[in-house]
Amino acid sequence: MASLLLSVSTASLQRLSKANNPDQSYVKDIQQKICENAAAEYSCITKEYHRNKSAKPRTIISDELSSTLNQLQSDLEVSDLYENMASRKNVLSRALPRTLIDKIGLDVLMQRLPEQVSILSSL
Image: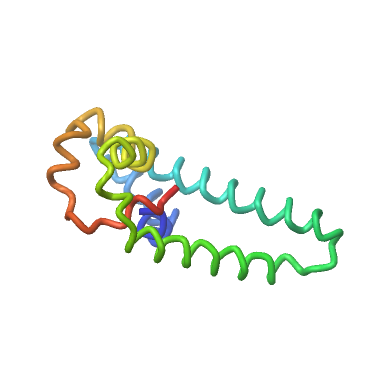
């Protein structure tokens, strides 16, 4: 889901929100999630940069973080974690836009999502 959310440009979302979209709160939820993910990534890179006493460039740290997250996503996709309903609900409730959950309901959304959704790796 994170990669899906990040693939939607902020400019596109801003155009949607200015286009008299009746559900601007949904767009704002997605923008908020993008900001949260970016802040978490920045924090992680900065902490690692300082932990290495500035010996490793931030670009290298960013590449390593990206590789680690991609490997984690691959590992999660082949794990049985998705079968754990409590974990699935917990992750989806934090990953999906609040407006969507409030409007449709988490249980209905879970019924509509494809079985092999890789959303568990979005947090």
